[in-house]
Image (cartoon, rainbow, N blue to C red):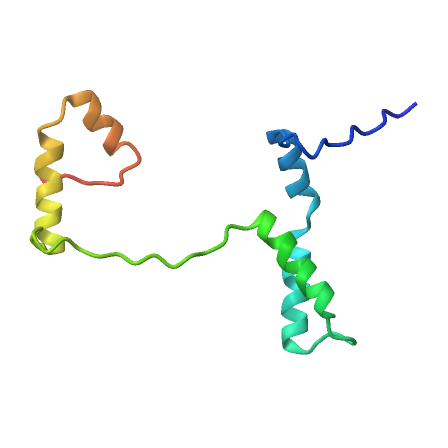
Length: 114
């Protein structure tokens, strides 16, 4: 006999496993494809406002919401160019213990000049 699903208590937070299962159940690519088809006018009947709102809510659960961030620079900090920044980084790495250098350099992300 199949196990009866446990209902969530609204006062309890869902577990990580429950949230991951919910995300997997939402077919993000299908929702995005339908929205794109709606936008391009490729659907026989356009999505209703209710369907659009549902898509928005489901996508908010599966995809990160992009937010704008304002980045400002402290006027007291001098601006440096990419060559000077690389030179400073290389100097910093040369001063590190050998085991730490290997951690940073594994993957060939940074090449030190001889």
